[in-house]
Image (cartoon, rainbow, N blue to C red; front, side, top):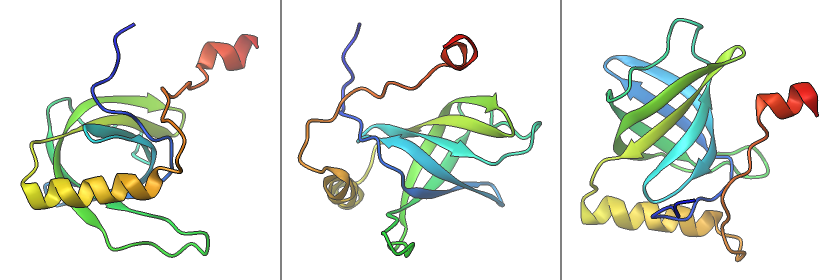
Amino acid sequence: MQEREHPRYAHEAALTLHVGGDAYQGRTDNVSRGGLCATLALGARDGLATGTDIEVDLQLVFEDERHSEPLRLPARVAWCTAVDEAHQIGIAFKPLPADLAQYLTMFLRFLDDGTKPTRSKRESTLDKRFG
């Protein structure tokens, strides 16, 4: 199995996707320096096409439900799949200017609890049906 270029942090952060004049709210499943996986409450027909240019606002969510200031990053849709009443979406960050790359690094450091990041082991729908 091929190793990922960047470690993923399986933490939930709030996000807003900006596509043209539309904005979609969701939560991350995991985040890395190269991109993220998130769940969005898009309508059944509202999937986003692979390759679509977007902007992503990431916000830390604190225990008292307050959010940090958003970190806006340029990105593109890597994949999008309907799951139940929502969509799971893979997002690849575009090359970042030095200042944004530094802010993203700080964001990821906040998510890092000191343990080695691991590959997320998401339960498959087959596991749910037959497990």
